[in-house]
Amino acid sequence: MTVPATISHAVQQTQEWLKELRETAGLEDEAAALTVLREVLHQLRDRLSVEEAVDLAAQLPIIVRGIYFEGWQPAHAPQKVHTKQKFLDQVTLKLLPRQIPPEPAVRAVLALLAHHCDPGEIGDVVGQMPSELKELWPATAVTFKARASKTAGAAHGAKRGH
Image 1 (tube, rainbow, N blue to C red):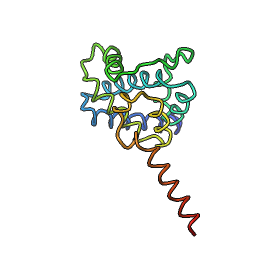
Image 2: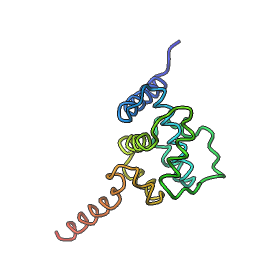
Image 3: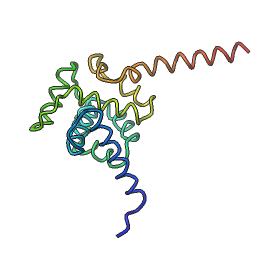
Image 4: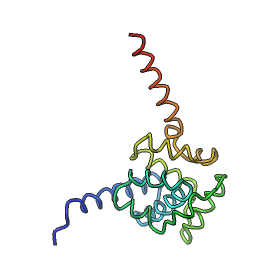
C-alpha cells in the first residue's frame, strides 16, 4: 500500500516535533515526548477562548492538531487557572504515572510552539494567559506584540518622514 504524500509529510512533521521536544526537555523517548506534548497542549487549549484555541490549532501539523483537539469540549472553555503552580499541578496529574518534572516539560512544549508557529498567533495566545502563566513562555513570545508594534510604529514614522 502506498501512503499518500500528505500523510507521509504529516507523520514526518510529527516525528520531527517529538524528536525536538524529547531533546529539549531531556525526555527518555518519543513516547514520553508525545505524552508531554498531548497534556500540555490540552492544558493550554482549555485555557483559551474557543476562537483562539481554533486559531492556534490552524498553526499545528495535521497529526498534532488531531492530538490537540482530542477530547475537547468547547462548551467548557476557557477554564480559569490563574497561577503557574495550579497549571503545573494539572499537567503533573495528567502525566501520571510518568514522573516527569512539569515545569521544564511545559517550557519545552511552549518553546516548541513559539519556534514553529506564527509569532503573531503565539502573541495572541500569550495575551490570553494570566501573568504567572506568561512566565512559562520564552521571552521572545511574551514580548513579540510589543516589539512588533514598535517596529510598525517606527516604519510608519519613517514613511511619514520622507
